[in-house]
Length: 126
Image (cartoon, rainbow, N blue to C red; front, side, top):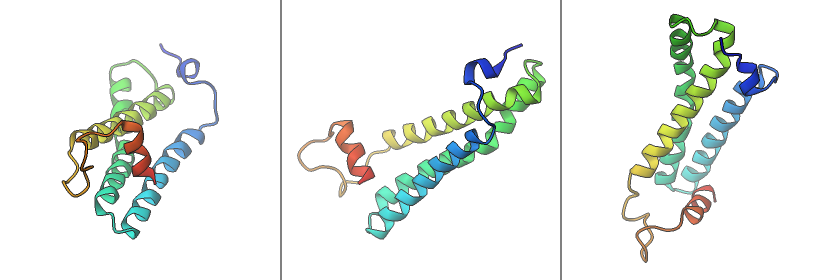
C-alpha cells in the first residue's frame, strides 16, 4: 500500500482545495479584465483555463473509485493523489487545447507567425 503523505508531504487538508480555488479565481479575474478591455479572444482563453481546472473537481471521484475498486488504496489514502491527478490532468489538457488552437488572424502578430513563448505569456497576462 502506498502512503501518499510521503510523496505529497504532510500539510493541512484545506491547502489543496485552496490552491485550486486560487487558480480558478485568478483565471476568472484575468478573463474579466480581458473582456472589460474588449479582448474577447483572451477572455475565452482564460475562461477555458478556469473551466478545465474547475471540471477537474468532478474527476476526483472517478480516481478515488478506481483506486478503491482496484484495491490499491483506501478512501482516505486515495484522496490526495486523486486530487492532484485530476487537477493536473485537466489543467494540462486545457493548456494543450489552447496551444493547439490557433489564434484568429486579427490577434496573431503580423511580422512572425510564432513569437517566443515568454513574450506570448506576458501578453496574455498583461
